Image (cartoon, rainbow, N blue to C red; front, side, top):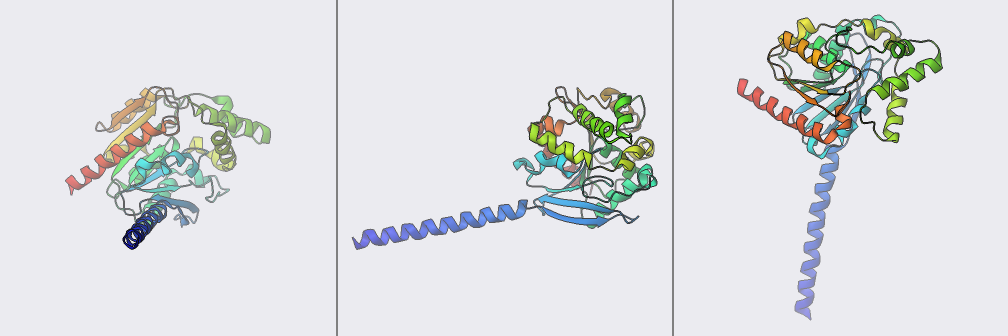
Length: 312
């Protein structure tokens, strides 16, 4: 009996030790994945809401959302097990989400300010050669950044259904929708916001996600929404400066951006650009085909990191 008791006691202690190790590992994992929230000031004083997730010691990926979006657009990336090895930084563009919403139109028409915002984020987060991932209008932000700052501080650029230029050749015409977004009448404006959001998807997300994104879109500054069509775009100066890896990823059924003309225009400016098209996705493949997107993003990050090491 004594021997059995001793063995049993040893067994219990062993189980407890294993449990402690498992608990510590779980807590460590939770701590690693826990979000950080803080504000970064842009050069013109606009406060930008910033969030971090994932492994703070991993390669940095900075996500830049599109018109009427926020960090919430990237929810399926932030919770992805495959992406937890990266330090994922999201921020709300000026006029969006929890960031400041200036009332002067120059704060939005001047595309250089968005470039300066991104530069401030890179500096404040201490990011070393981050991979930039920009959706829709986020593509303009990245192009303007490249024009103003070049690519020496970044490791790669991924345009996700990115706007290359704000012109009729590359942007699908939805005159009533865009007029509604700029309208003073509240009902007209909100109806246009709902229609615009619906145009983002070939495969619509579940009702809860859609309603959350709709509420988020309704938070965006009207001044910003009205000013964005006349925002300066420096892609002609910016894209040719990119010597780091650049990937264009589009949904083949995009209803807001003309896909093949956008890819062709980008390649006119930089022949090194790679591209891929998800034939069954709309304007938001990172939501519509999230698992595939996350895998392709991880592959791009790893290749960009490797390319950076080889160039050192």
